[in-house]
Length: 312
Image (cartoon, rainbow, N blue to C red; front, side):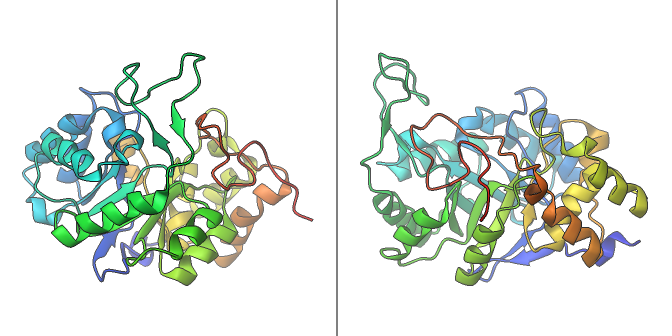
């Protein structure tokens, strides 16, 4: 089966094209991430997903330089961290300086959560009782208004959100003048988020999938049904999990620092409707699992934040 049959790019609502597969850099250690980014770009990747909170943007920038690939050929995403929500321009400047570029192709609000700096930690401030220093009264529409200003400035070519639920997007819809281009969320067959995908599609918001290969807590790679589809198609479970999103019109962001896996993660294949149907149904069969639930003191509008919800 030809990898050429799966889409290589999708369209943003700005008219720009975004590569369907990008290299994720979350949890990639400084020292490893520079060579991973350079290797990926030298071997055909043209999409790098970064964030200030990952603590490795200067190494990501060095990897981009090392690759020799011209900046204008690379789609670079970064994310506004929670502590910078009252001053998005300051957050963006830190990111641009670290990456060594004067613009981003996409800038996302990392979480719909404002953290209040209090001297305990620059990026993850905590209260005296150890809880996160969250300001739940902060109006996210004010953060988005600043993102729209950055978009108008040309320093970011598109703006979007990450980890936003339907209720949060519904509220944003009432005040925004620019519709988010992207919503980047945790997405995989154990957390397919079918309703969110349909909602975003109807608004022209492209979904992006992080943690597409699961984790130790969500063992997608060893799931028998996923392995059976892999074996039927003559590919690895990872290729099936990456192809699942690309076939559904979702950008996928697998993360690796291993050269072998960076290469194999780029290959998406065309899946049959039957394969997609099986993958779409796994969560409803009792395998539902959300991996990434930081302690924000809120479920952020996701009804399954604290555990799977039975659909009546």
